[in-house]
Amino acid sequence: MIKEKIIHEFIDQIWNNQRKDLVEKFVANEYQIHLDTGDNWEGKKLNHIAFKERLDFSFNSFPDMNFEITSAIEEENHVAITWILTGTNLGKIGDFQPTNQKINTNGMTIYYFKDNIITGPHRSLIETK
Image: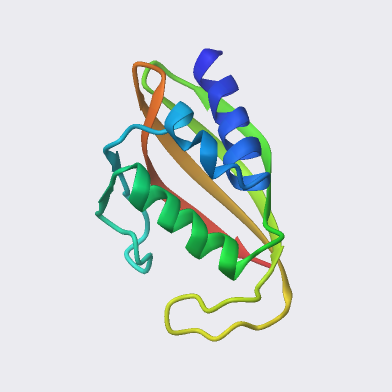
């Protein structure tokens, strides 16, 4: 249950409370992105500086974003979570202009670990409501 606890803290502190100062506590300096092909970060390896830039992009697009973890399953080297993301789209996402609308989106992410540090996510499945 150690890795599951780490993921809950990571989501709460880094994403929900926008604590970029804690990135080094949770994230490996070589963080590999494996998401859907439409994601601008797909296939990239991010160091701590680039990971913080990714956070800035997300926080600029959704300044009030909040993830609620609805379930978590821990295995030896990864934790799979399902989540609900809420927030208001106030910034550009790729080629899409801001909608100024609230969103409510379900998704699933598998976070991989090495030595209790997150090394990257794999495939987020998203369903927008």
